[in-house]
Amino acid sequence: MVVVLASSLLVSGMAGGQARTLRVGFVSTLSGGGAALGQDVLDAFQLAVRHLGGRLGGLPVEVLTADDQLNPDVARAAVERFLRRDRVDLVTGIIFSNVLLAVGDLVFSSGVFYISPNAGPSEYAGEQCNLHFLNVAWQNDNMHEAMGHYATLKNYETAFILAPNYPAGRDALAGFKRFYKGRVVSEVYTRLGQLDYSAEIAQIRAARPRAVYAFYPGAMGVNFIKQYAEAGLMQQVQLLVPGFSADADVIRAVGKPMVGVFNSSHWALELFNPINRRFVEDFRRSYGRIPTLYAAQGYDTALAIDHGLRAVAGDLGRKAEFRKAILSGFDSTRGRVRFSKNGYPIQDYYLRQVVELPNGEIVNRLRGTIFRNHGDAYVEKCRLP
Image 1 (cartoon, rainbow, N blue to C red):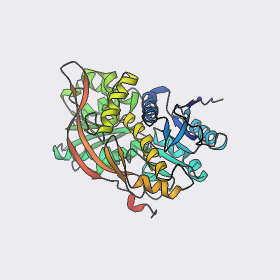
Image 2 (image 1 turned 90 degrees about the vertical axis):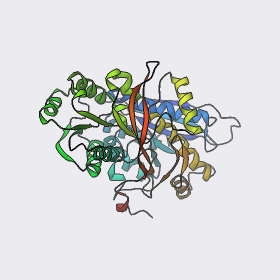
Image 3 (image 1 turned 45 degrees about the vertical axis):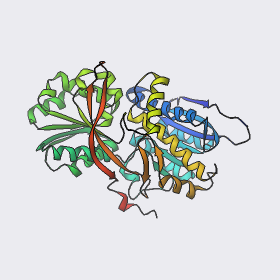
Image 4 (image 1 turned 60 degrees about the horizontal axis):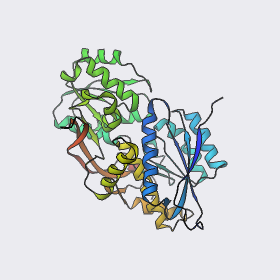
């Protein structure tokens, strides 16, 4: 029997005691190879709630958490419990698109909003767009589109591209190819959760491409980059990755072999705005680690919910107004973010490079802007007004 790990955290800040409590169902990958990603989103979400005085939209908050174990069936059971037994007002937290696609119908049919801090499948951007879905992060293809464009600008005539075989992996390579004008010499899909890439590295060596583009989040990315470096390919074939595969979690695990790697992101440590400065400083102080883009997305998810709730005076029964308020834009760690009608952001995408600072710390640094005000490729298929 599968056991869903669940806990409830009553966030402080319930002074006054009269407002009803906002119940948030937070289901995420909190164990296994993707645990660091889910934990970053959860920690940052809770940090934002603390920064907001323990309230969202003026309401005290109760966060119910569940570990989906990167298993769609486990996630579905957790979401059913959140909706039917716990009567949550909102659901959030999911990292992986195959998990989100397994529970979306449950959430949407209940009339509850799903506010995504990460997973952004193409299905929910186009014909299956839904009034109860909003993504605070990006549409799955976007970061990969940015690196496809960058690879074209750098005149990498040939590319070997890889990703896990699940919805976000397929969206990833579709996005890269949409903007890459060179020749893809091989397009490889590996098993989700795979940790040994010796066969794929042998294929790369044999293909002799000018560049490799690899999308591997969490432990998959750690292992791929370690093995790529150990094979001596860092000095032979330019490695390009999206921000997920070169973020602080991967850097912590891989170390110096990461130095020099270029990656794309919608967020960076040094984005100069008051919200981001406070977030970065307090996340490091609170949790003793450098925040990732996943953490920034978790923080922004709480800010988006707070913004929407304030527009409706805490009344989620005013669904259309809540959605409209978020779509019109809110202030985030990335600055002002606005949205298309399908609920996906329109925002800038940056080029980052992993560097070693004089004190020995290894971090990403901004190197330029790849896209400005970039949306997604599917919005015209969305029939929402």
